[in-house]
Structures are given as structure tokens and as C-alpha cells.
Length: 250
Ligand SMILES: [Zn+2]
Image (tube, rainbow, N blue to C red; front, side):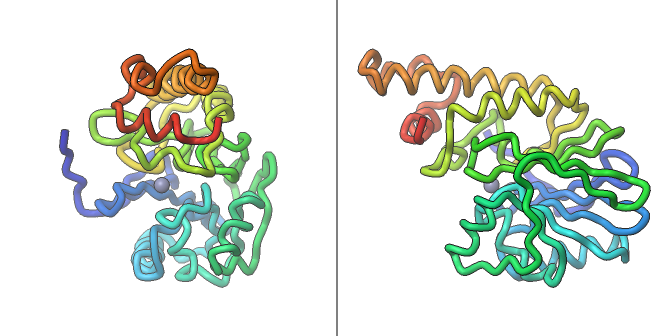
């Protein structure tokens, strides 16, 4: 199934809460604007792409910005230089992974649990729900709006949820369903995935169920009770996605 991603433009999900979706990687980023400053959620995949996003933020607001990184993967984090100097909020594992790749995080502010930021008349909650898609996932909740920026805790590929890229050597499969339970506990109305069109809570619950089944299949394969082919046949996700998930650490 194919889907055409339109030219990037801001979409206002709630007053002062925006998302912007790109054809490249089908990435979705975020922007939350307060009375005193704004918060940029993820930075795109490189310095040029980051500069495009920074200029686009300036179409919306001239307020100083802070950045939050939902995780360390390049498609979300490597546009950061275009925003520096500024406060950079991230989980310690995210900051460590960036330093390992020689990506500087100068004004680093750790999100190791729940952090509430005051943007001026608007608070935003940053939270680490445990290791899941990566070791340092952070989601962003905008209380009072029903909007959650989920990073790659939620993905929405054309025609489905997760893709082969969703599962890597830094994935903790067992941590992922409880992380989505935490997101569902916020009773979100609008969830911005790391990739793809925005979704609602029903999609989130479906993702959690798919991941729970993957985790069961993962255990069964590791225990020798099920062959990888049999596991792929029972998964609700495409075979190549299931194979990638089964290769991830449990
Ligand atoms: Zn991603």
C-alpha cells in the first residue's frame, strides 16, 4: 500500500500545539508554544533538515526554543546542531548514545522519569516510560489538550503499525507494552507517532496488543516451543516485521 505524504506544513492539533510531517522517513515532529518559550519535539535527520525545521518554527513563533529528543536515532536527533545553543532535554541513555556517535549535547537536561516544563502559561510533561523502542525513549504530553508526542513508541507505516525499522539491537521488547499502557493512561485524544499520520487511542491499544503477541512469540521461539516460521504465521504483523521483532532482545 502506498500513501503520498504532502509537502511539509504545520498542522495545529490544539491551540499552540503543532505537528509537521515529512516525506523523508515519513517523520513527524512537534512544536508546543507557550507564552515565554517553545518546545521543539525532535529535530529531523541532519543539519540541513534541522535548519529547515528551525526556519519553519520561526514561521510560527519568535520565542526562544528548547528541544526534547524522543530518542537517539539519527532520523530524530541529528538535526540538533541547527537549534544549538539551547536546552536539550533527553534521557541519559539517549545523550550517551549521541555522544558515542560524536554528537554534541551541550546544554543537556536529563529526563529520567517525569519532568514538567513551564513554557509560560502552559506546562508540558516529558516522561521516560522505561526502555522500549530504544533504551532512552521519552514521550511528550501536553496536559489539557489530549495530545501526546510518542516518538517511535508508536509508528504508523502505510497500511499498518510497525515496520522492520521499529525493532533494533537497542529495543527492549518486554518494556514496550507497559510503555504504551502508560501512554493510554493519559487518555490521549491525539497521538503523534514518530513516523506516519497522527492516530487515536484505539490505534495505540492495537499497537500494544500486537507487541504483547510478539513478546509471547519471542518467548516461545527462545524456549524452542515454536519455530520462527510458525511464529511469523501467528503474528498480526507482516512476516518481515515479525522476523525483525523476534531478532530484537526480549
Ligand atoms: Zn524513527
